[in-house]
Image 1 (spheres, rainbow, N blue to C red):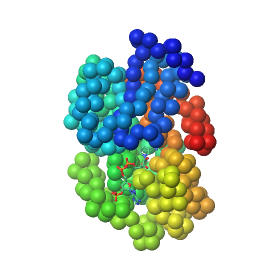
Image 2: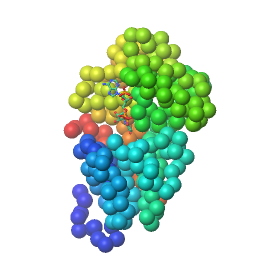
Image 3: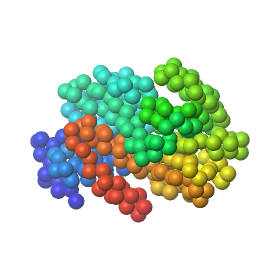
Length: 293
Ligand code: NAP
């Protein structure tokens, strides 16, 4: 339990700006971490609609807020207000973490770290393999970047509801990273059974399956999955999505979105405080919180 009388003139404020913002677990994750590490910081959510981003950023700087996370719908629009942008955020074109360095705002994309850490235990089997990413939004872009940088894919299939966006992403990564082995598809599960089945890794980077729509999945065709495959769902609420349930029954190794969530937060925490987040503790705390709320 936070003791509020500990906040004083030296307390550093960290925030998250987005719209809507009510669903975020970041305040819980960071405030527990500050408490455990005995750091004089507080993390607060700020609901900032799309057209008030500029005013919010000016306010953050004026108030000396030390850093903040950026979530939907601002991850791309924020770039114009930043002094420096890290390499991965610049390639992806989206920022989720900002450090306020005495009025100069520096942007990072720590989702890449969260994705990479989640997949690292499987690095040997993933290297050089066929991979599929479903989705063409910011999370999919982070995934494609992380795969190209760290797992040398033989080929990446981008699958999306709106095929044109998958096609644009294919061209985007060719121009940004000179990676040409990308195919794009429309999300028509029946037509994609072989594409899914032949992929060593399948990533769901859409919101399909998230509460309250827990009966949705990118595919419910069991033949899409196979033993030895890795299926990674970015959704973390619920932890076991319908997609992961079906894939697990077919013998695939499944990864939920919790580790990604915690590790992206851990990298942001390190950028703001210079300290390591107590990740094992936070993983347990969030798992308990998600499964009981
Ligand atoms: P986004 O930019 O809004 O992209 C959403 C993607 O999902 C788009 O490709 C969209 O397809 C697709 N989509 C949405 N509803 C769909 C439906 N009913 N059927 C088929 N496709 C649908 O969102 P994002 O930022 O990339 O995030 C995507 C997911 O990743 C979210 O669930 C988010 O919570 C999760 N995420 C998790 C973490 C983590 O730490 N675990 C971090 C970041 C994001 P169209 O292009 O056709 O609209």
